[in-house]
Image (cartoon, rainbow, N blue to C red; front, side, top):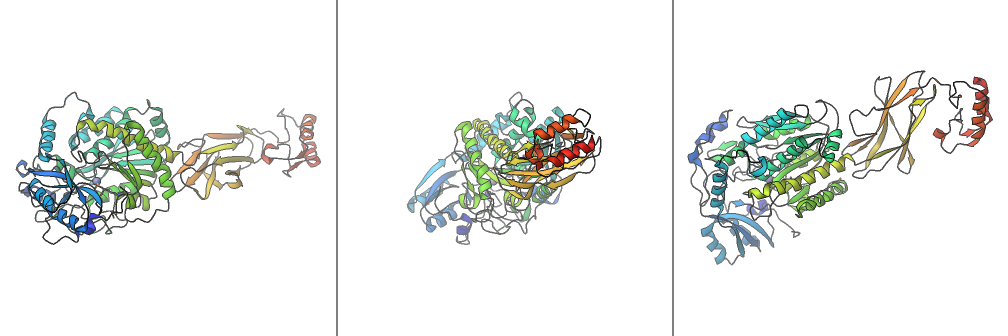
Length: 605
Ligand code: 0X9
Ligand code: ZN
């Protein structure tokens, strides 16, 4: 879809004031059964989660989902009068878009000669079928054979901790407006607080997007169950920690499951006034808050809230991220449309990191396709999808410097939010592949090869040279970004900027040491998104050591004596030193092995 899009929000502003309120917010939709949200009103003021009244169920009898061809602004205005629930994510003049509306309203489309195709003719029937299926006991069935409610998600997270207590722990990101904890897990081989790169995968910011819940749970499941079996997972866990928050909007999610709820609810469950509920948690973030593609109308499905971070759910996630400055990568999962969108989403202006984002994003798209041959459109969000100001990933990228973006998982509209169970695993697997690709690309974004290093024993009181080669493949090195780090005999960490010597090579010296001292060292290279290490991208990188052999540097053959044999060594190397570090006989570091060096050997004899 490469036509130039105008966000529906802008055009909806053109709609007459008589336009219907959002069905999923408050008052009944055209065909939806009237809802009394008394219980939810109590909810909003009470911190504890109360049961939802089953009599309050929002139904969509007589509603269909139609793919409408929007030929003009008039077409769009008419469709917006018929429907308060756009299912596809953007709409442009000259493009198609999916809307839920009453079957009876199709006649209006006919009379206006607006071309359309009914994509879902039995919406309520599908919701009923899903509900009946979910009411059956699922004992013995594999977890991913069907969608799971909040309690089941939480139980599963607890089970992961119980089964792998040394790998998995529960983390939380605060509490929702109705008092539900926003729970996640940390998956790491290292103790909490160890500084190593971290990734975060988040889902269900929008309540009805159940496929995102299952996708993030699958990512958690793979990392936990296959942490030693799958070499790619094992390698990531050697170098990084992984956080997964499957349900960022627990109140909304619960509401989509409840008898007495609304399967198509999107926002959180803040009571705004009367029967109007909800702030769009993906319009409430602080970067670009209030801009295009967000609404100031409380009943809108894209209502941004009264201020950036007005919602406890956004605050909780924000504070979790701030408390983990080692986070380097983030994918927020949504449904549906099969898209991989990276910043910016609040503007169509290219991000300063567009090249690096595409260098990871295109391989992610390829990785998805390799699993089940599904095509996901990939690109910067603003120009690929339309403007959506106040999104989580603009904030994690723009304020925290993380590589971030949004995946809209399956499908492209045949099923939309009410996806058949047969799609759960294929969908989760292709998106796991995308997640792995992001992690691997970032962890290898600046591979460092050590090209010259001291051996494990070094001569007494002699500085030794370290030389590395690094080729940034994802984003460019920052200024002074290649550094040699060391400690002497386990003391304070010291750092020296390595000097560029051309050819992507850098050089620095480890200090001369007193007899029997030991230096432990590694090299780091810092790019926009991540610091990579040599010899290994691990927190315990001080695993290269050089011990002073207490050997006189003039004892060139290591015999324990400075003698005539060492003069022989000097004579053998006579002439200019190609590489000073490889020129041990250049005892006075003049750049030449010459008679002065013979003199130094004689002095030590
Ligand atoms: O509108 C949204 O928040 C997302 N679409 S959805 O249908 N799941 O609601 C898209 C957000 C796109 N922008 C980015 N955050 N990248
Ligand atoms: Zn969404």
